[in-house]
Amino acid sequence: MPIRHLPPSVVSAIAAGEVIERPADVIKELVENALDAQATQITIELENYGLDSLKVTDNGHGIPAAELPLALERHATSKVHTLTEFEAVTSFGFRGEALASLVSVADVVLASRPPGSAVGTQIRVTEGQLSTPHPQAMMPGTQVEVLGLFERQPARLKFLKKLSTELRRSVEIVTQLAIHHPHVGFSLYHQNKILLLVPAGQTAATRLTDVFGQTVTTKLHPLTFEAWPVKLQGWLGSPQLAKPHRRHHFLAVNHRPVSLPQLSQLCKEVYGSLLPPKLEPWLMLNIELPPQFLDVNTHPRKTTVRIMDDDTIWKTLRQALSDALHTPPQRYPTLPRPASLPLSLADSGPNWQPLPRLTSLHTRDQLQNVTLPWKFDSEQPPEIMQIDRTYLAVATPHGLSLFDQHAVHERILFEQYISQLNQLAGHATSATLSEPILIQLEPSYAQLLQDHLADLSQLGWEINEFGPHTFQVSQVPQLLLDHSIETVLHEVLHDIESGKPLVGLDSQAERTAAYLACHQAIKAGDFVAPAQRQELLLKLWQTPNHTTCPHGRPTQIEITIPELEKMFKRR
Ligand code: ADP
Ligand code: MG
Image (cartoon, rainbow, N blue to C red; front, top):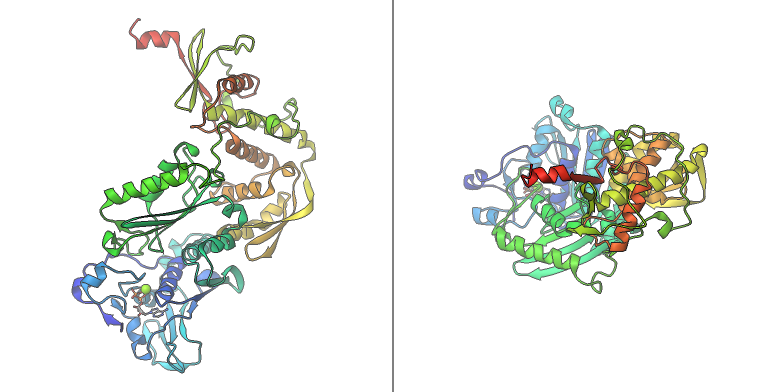
């Protein structure tokens, strides 16, 4: 369709607001335009985090020379022309706003060559002034270059986060678009450095592996589901991939990446006791719905959509997700749903001998000297009930003691780790790995690591860049030598990402121990057999700091007999 101005009825229906707030928004709008133009190859090049120059080149169907100036005008679009089309839109764009918004916050050079034309045409807007079009030699497709973003709006520049954070957002947005469009090739560069490079024509699964690496993709469970009007396709991450944030919820509706808090919440509910309360599952899901079930015009940056006829659709989605997660293993063979877990490191790994604790890592734990009000008698173990697959309950001479099975197990494992680590505490230096390991990180984490390589080297890591978002680790802090370096590195990056300061070896080791303990401990929702319940409580009694878990939550609470008497109004 030719580019035309939208009629007033449509213009007044547009969700108003700022379209461009940061470089990542520019990338999103330009890449979406390229996808709307059926491009199969999209290149994004940034200079100075996209502020000096941000260039997107595609091989799509281009813009006819005569329509170039119109493309930059507000509410001029080729994608919809009537209110009916507007309400049933399937393209990314539909408001004709993005290029016009860009022109108001930056200088823009737009060049395009439809495949049928022998030559391209370029127009340029400098400080709002449009130049006369002139021919430009170029491959078929479109190139938009945005120069000096926000240079004329210092207030907007101030609004930006740290530039490295802005770059990470840019990487994230390209990652999102790339995993939901596996047939399209993407390359993203910052000052000529490759941040993401994926070829055209991939399957969704290969694309995921290229972007996230095998450590992630071997822990994903495919999901396909169809029941009119919904189609759902994607992957659910196994619990090991869970994180305390939703940045790993890669959700899309009709391949449009969006945030869908309601779907995120639903998934969390469906995982239920497979995950501890604060962790979020890893998700990559695309919902397909006919346009009449969707309102995509709800947010100025189109970052979310509204799903109509919610009830039926949400019910169907819940069923599909729940079936996928909880069906018997022949469909999802690798999803761990353990009936029981080893209670201690000794049960699961190499011989472990408890050793006296050496350091004062826990003096700040104010509760450490509190003793439990009764003693666990291993000769005559009490009967222990499990309540809601989460709590253990014991009648004691003083009343009723209730334990949180996850917190208890976490504390036991944590102290075992700390004790192990303390054996090495005298040699808290770096250790060279016998064979360097290669770690592929997802692009945004790679960027984060890149920014902190120097800090990490001061903490005993030697990490070098090996390829696009791949790193070679050749030296690690001694304390971490026997652990999964990849897990630890992810944990370190996660700490950095969530704003925790990078800390010295001891605290890092302690934090890592807490992380490993949390991931290995029995979860709420796991059945714990009677013999294991006894072993768990017995071990707890022999463990230092046993009144709280490593995160400071109580492992147990007590309801005393006087309290019971009060509750029953006997007193
Ligand atoms: P919208 O995408 O909402 O239509 P934009 O301001 O993003 O609005 O773009 C205006 C018009 O310019 C589009 O409707 C389209 O016709 C044209 N256009 C923009 N970018 C491209 C591109 N990369 N390839 C082809 N046409 C494009
Ligand atoms: Mg657009």
